[in-house]
Amino acid sequence: MAGWWDVVAVRILDVADVAKTGRGALMAERKAKSSRVQKVAMAQGMLIVDMVPMTMWGRNVRAIISGETWKELRSAFRSVPWMRDYQNLISLPDGHDDWTTVCKICSVQDSKLELHEVWEYDDHNRIQRLIDLIAICQDCHLAIHLGRANQLGLYDKAIAHLAKVNKWSNKKIENHVAKANERWFQRSQHNYTLDVSWLKKYVPGSKLHLEWLDTPKFWIDD
Image (cartoon, rainbow, N blue to C red; front, side):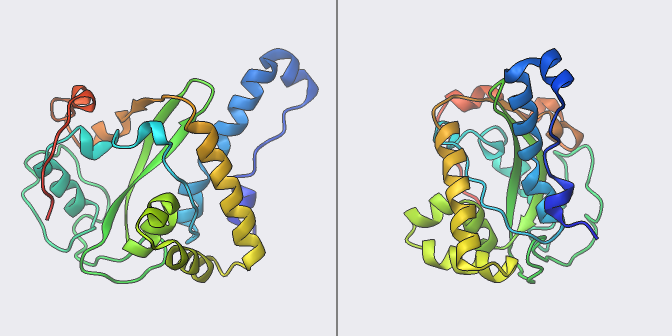
């Protein structure tokens, strides 16, 4: 059976493809495919470090919707075990009526999970594209956002969780983190355009406020 690394392996274009698309387009295709690793890997129960570029900190789903809509998304995607009226949502994901709150990566049961935004990066066109929302535990969330874990003094804990979930050796972890750091550093040199069109399957466009990205906004989530 093929592993997740086989599923997401980047296809190598032949000489004719390179001649038609050019080196820039070739690299863009490779990066676009490799940026889907996180979603595919998580579907296979793997934990992947995928840090948001420094230039995009604070520019996310939570920044463009109200606190009420965010709570409804958390409930709909099962990061909290209570139901709402979903007045701000136009559609609900599969399994929204299942009251069980289980981390979608490590399968731990927790009454209060965190809602993780899964992003795909188009490094050629500088687009950060939302492709999923999943409920995960705090430990998995820290491992994904390893830089944040380091800021909080929880780096060793995050690394230990990464090793436990993936059953990786120290060498495997070292190589994985080094590559994640390199991707983060390269992407942090550029500004990206936020693409949250995927979210329109669940939230009406009138509830998405991209203009809020340039206006400081504060609200308290429970």
